[in-house]
Length: 311
Picture 1 (cartoon, rainbow, N blue to C red):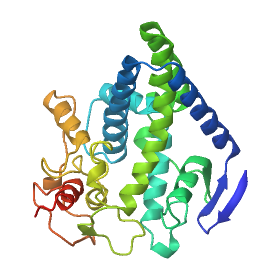
Picture 2 (cartoon, rainbow, N blue to C red; picture 1 turned 180 degrees about the vertical axis):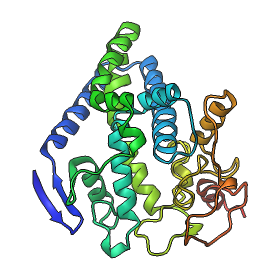
Picture 3 (cartoon, one colour; picture 1 turned 120 degrees about the vertical axis):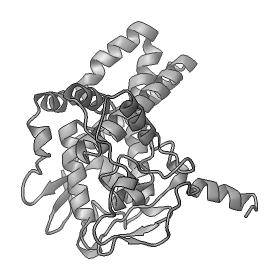
């Protein structure tokens, strides 16, 4: 490992193991995706990506387990966490730890937020930090939330990690052959990993900021053009202002697939006690820059209007 700089909070190091894993995964995705292309495999890739990223990561891990924006019976929480782990970004404990670390540092004044957690050094540096570096906090390992640490199923999912791709690969091979494995596992994992961190970067540097959070290094942006691709997570300034809300987009002009999924689960009585923007106060010390109407147009819609010369 190579030390790339220390702060009073900890050290970010270049992790050779992560570089090697990223290189092997992307080489496999390029070769496998090209050699075993089929439209049915692309459909499997799209379907698995949507399910694991929407129901698994956005709904199950982020809005559910991390922010407790709704409640669900243990079997439902476990099923959503399984889908989230299958996305390949990390298990429920690891995702919780990293989220809380980022949240803590991004809520510090800008001068006190380590570059590893900020976005002041540009896209390439931010992606290098996210994909190839490991953060070592000075005060030791960061714990996950107690309700996650104490759950045996979440601990098993954390230990299983990427090994969960193996039974999935076997099932895909039995159903669709090598092309389904190449696209349903290798291509999906590679693009999910890169896409997740690209969206994370853009939703902190590009887009509207209807809310101001004084004294915090990172306040998020509402990057509406990424709303569908991000499962609604790109309404990130709104999320920073209302972190406990299961809803991130306001109205039909701010599409939020994660919120649609939560509403569907609530209609099926699989989740309850759902918190929304209408039910929650603003985060303390947050200022409203521009009031957001219920059906506020997205950033993407505004860009299209400008491009076509409409008012």
